[in-house]
Image 1 (cartoon, rainbow, N blue to C red):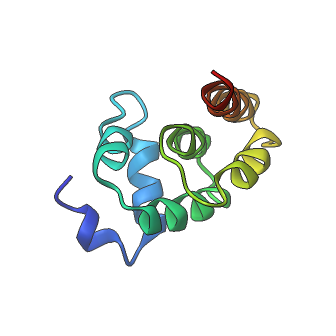
Image 2 (cartoon, one colour):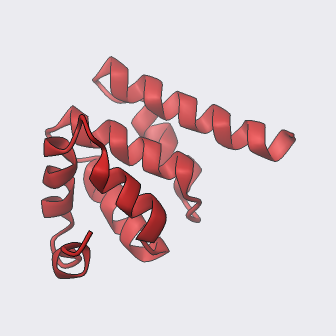
Length: 103
């Protein structure tokens, strides 16, 4: 996604893009493939405070796809989200991570 370097200084902007891109998940796929650890960390921390559940579940999914040092701690926070779908996606990501470590 060509805007990622430009938007790095505005993680909330990327979170809003994620919310708008909910159905196609192009932003999520791009971040999975090209996002560096720092960008993913900043973005997923910002996502916790997003008003958009469409962005929050994608942040949880991103944490399941890409490993960052505090990823599991963040996923635990997403797993307690007020939106049931966000919490479910976070729990699924946690299961995928722990399943991958066990198997």
